[in-house]
Length: 482
Image (cartoon, rainbow, N blue to C red; front, top):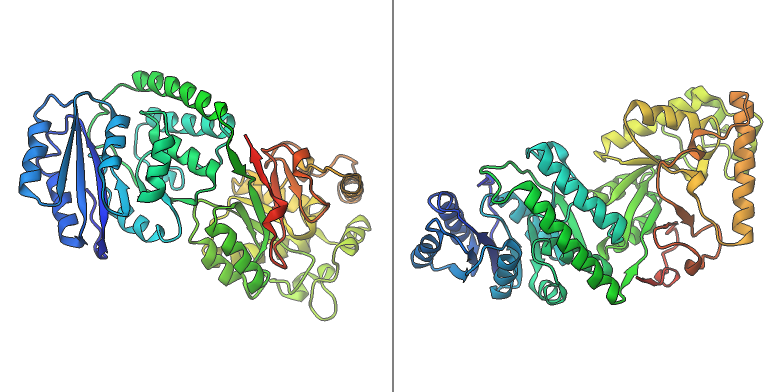
């Protein structure tokens, strides 16, 4: 058990801990945890769900119930983790519920997750957000990654690690529990159903290190999980559900109005990713907002076309006008690149200056894109690709993966593609498209600002990129039947 140095006071919290053959942990670790909760959490309870133990754990939990008033005990005849978790959740009486494991009594998770239940119905402890904190053996890590891959690619789930520590609001938890059909992967099913129902959920990083061997072998667990995934797949496909389409928001940091709109969408769980521009005085406000949502991917929104540059004007003369502002916006920037007026060294200097500011804001980015699609053209395309390669950034907005649904949208994309080839000819002496058009470095996406989007013509796995400059009307993203 890991204790925090300062323990905030919480009230009306139920903690559920499944117990199976944990006699050693019931001697010290679990009693210490119960004492901690009893001391720091008012009007709260710890529900120990003993299931089929044969090592004396059943008698030990009964003893803890006599010793501590906050302990409630549930006994199940057979050892089954999912059934124990379900029974414990149905037993709780408090409005906030935390599910921990006997060998993973993480107080830091509890104290970080409980305040977030004001905005989210579920807070999940993710082993993916900070891989350096996951000290499990390789095979266990690989198993978690495989489960996430299956949920992402076969169930349409857009979240990350779905198993492990959880905090719930009781009302939504019971609704999800009543719909669930699985046992061993019940946590993953609840996360999937929350996603499909638009129930707000978030993830926070957690540290994990095994303190005892797993109770069942890896091979046996894989067989159980495979069987449960088949059952879950049949259940969710037999009944139609609705999913709100994944959204990506550009322009975080542009203005307080844009930042507030993005914050509202984040609170509703609508955004999968956000692009942050840093050459605006409002970028610090946007960074503070994004820091509260670590499960949302953040892209660096490289800007060469609007506002004040970050680098000194004398260091980027081909990019600025006499007033020191970016000289070329929209179509003018395209023409400057085609004509070879934009110097690659200037782009490199401005990119480094903006990246330095991004670092100072304390934001960890997962990808790179750009304002007005500047990196679709040379020389910005090569500058971005070179930097991403050297710094192991695998995600770049890829214009070869852009989808259009109207003639006007398709025509605009063809014009941009032609301009990209011409800039490649100018700077690289070849008509081969720039690197930002090749391969698969992001997901399929459509631009809401390019054309009237009829989402029925766009596949459900396509991300819709939005520009919430004047607020965002959610009616343009109807729910999708699955």
